[in-house]
Length: 317
Image (cartoon, one colour):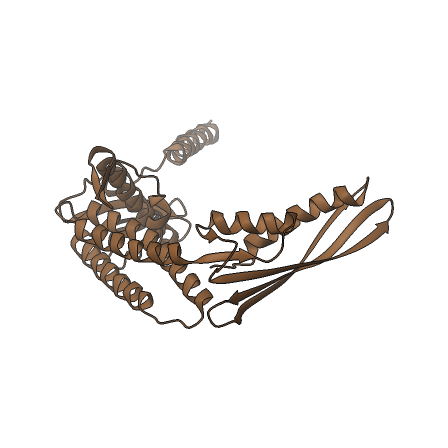
């Protein structure tokens, strides 16, 4: 009887501790309060918490959260406030601000808390708004200096000058996005001087582009595509006394293969500066087209091939 008694006591103890252990395992771990409770941004700092497989991932995710806050702030700011740009009042925010924000380097962030939780890294960090604003202002000023330097380069090759100005226009659009971000971080900032400066640079480039005239020395379907390409870029086509002549040559080879009518060819472009009577650039690229019916139909596909390749050769960029 004594043995039986002790046996039941042992079983009872095992059962009690076993159940307690099981219940303990069933208790779900909770995130620490500093992670669960969202910190409200102050006038000086952005706060964000996030998690990741590594500490680096967690930090990146937290900074992306701050970037998202800035993006929302910009959208709100420019939907509710008119902006003076090129002497035109508008509420448009057509540009993709978010993609630009992702490229901001948050060099001044500080990790406040970090912990490994459920095999993941969790962090709480802050970004100093004043330092971020100052960094952006320095970047904006430096980019304006760079753009003004490029604007005043005296190119003897007119095509290089066209390419330079087109790159400046792209830089200006990216710079404008950065200015809007700067304005969102510093609510008291006056960005009118920056936008006015951008407008003046654009006007100078526009005057230059309006003075550039092209002539195509060929008259066929391929020349028509080239003409459309040039006018789409904002340049004028003239029949006489152009600044630039583009000599277009298309060499074709007909091939019959496995029931297909195949056209293979080489497109050649020679860009001539008529002031100096010199070739300033040459482009050669392969084009092709095929059809099961006839070579005329294959030529339509070859025309499309020519159009696609024109977009890729960076004639003006």
